[in-house]
View 1 (tube, rainbow, N blue to C red):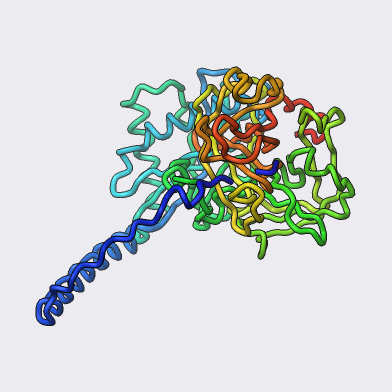
View 2: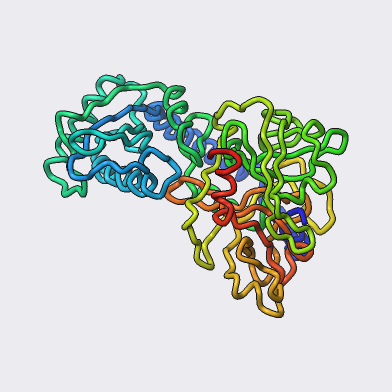
Length: 437
């Protein structure tokens, strides 16, 4: 099974609107054209004014001490639940401080980069992004932000006690900001170093469609056999390691025969690497699809950018309830047994409970604890051949986590036959034992 997801065109016939008789005479038409041209001119003027005046991002590195909480050892592990929850709390607090009080500018986002121990409690290092008129200087804005920060510390009830004298703000450029964020997984950025929020993907997926933006799914890789092209999808989980499905290597486990590419198209690829090592789960059973998980190590590391980025591995205790919205991506066929697609496609699907998936009329008990079902009971949207090994991801506060690996399913997008994925949380310790991640 090798699974993005599509509806067949036949179910959505194109409506052809009847052509009406012409009722414009030349004078009416020329007047109408002039009016439209004037409206367009005014609109362009307004938009240009706002874009030119207001279209600049400013990045700052903020550091401060929090005195009412103690440092925990797991704060040093960025994938740990403790780091994630505490970071979200701090990021929400920053949002409360700066939202609606940034004057002519606006607060965009914040990301915690590091939590470290301090004798007063906890030391925080984070990146703040603002939009201000391009005419403002970095230093003017820095003073404005500091003023807002100190004012709001006085008037707002905040969950954390910040030591005022410890607060410092340093202007940084986009490149430095990107490098700092590279220490965090699962963050998507546009080419202009703006965060890509989760809803930007949701809006465009109706029937499983082509990815529209570079950097939308930057951890997606294509695994290719020399001479035979794309075989499977995979997900980048560090500078050198890819997570994929064991069944991708059934025919060929020789790493020297494999390459991995990144980017929204297979040809041309944005980045290309050779594979140096393949690790297939020791207890993979092809008959039952159990333990359908494998790792591939690249011979040379990739540099993280807005086009290539690692996805976060979930905490082993993560459990997504049924109906949770998740995304599957890949270069696979859009109809059963169809050809590989050159452009990356994406689809929004839902988690389906194992109890439902194991019903007699669905998969009749074939779903084991290491598997996860996602899709729709009515079919229509699913992964398909060529998507195997690719990611099933969900977002938590705009940080993306891989929860499933495309594994198997009966045909593609059939009713009561949703996609079955390897459940990543079940293999979290196995991944660490092989990669140290």
